[in-house]
Image 1 (cartoon, one colour):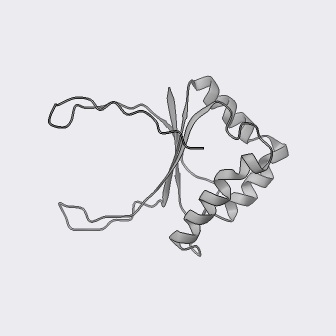
Image 2 (cartoon, rainbow, N blue to C red):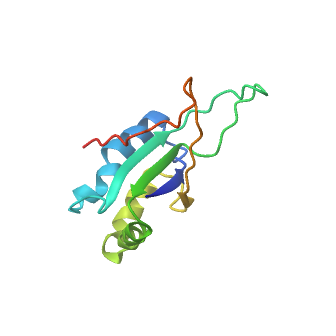
Image 3 (cartoon, rainbow, N blue to C red):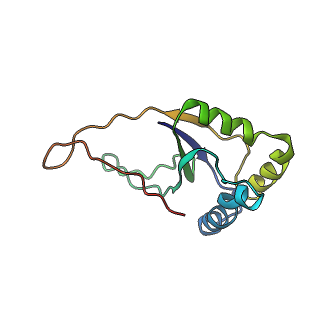
Length: 137
């Protein structure tokens, strides 16, 4: 399994509430609204994590990390990830996607990366937690 991570900054003129509302109710549904079936072919999970800066317990500072949302998509393979990236850049839909992003994000240029995860034992039993992705329609 491979996880794609994208770091996103909202437009400065949007409140966090407006950003979250548009992302959840419009942008995250864009592929589906454009007729893609399924909306994210071969994706196993699609998650948006909205960021709230908190006080650093060591320094007392509240530091803005520079992003408002971390978007994650899980794919079964590198091939599925690459096929999806190729599909997203299809000229027939590219301008529609970019125009919708301009309503939401500070830029179309957002860091995209893949993540290799390693778990450490935690908790009273010193075990590695077994997390099953939650699938929501």
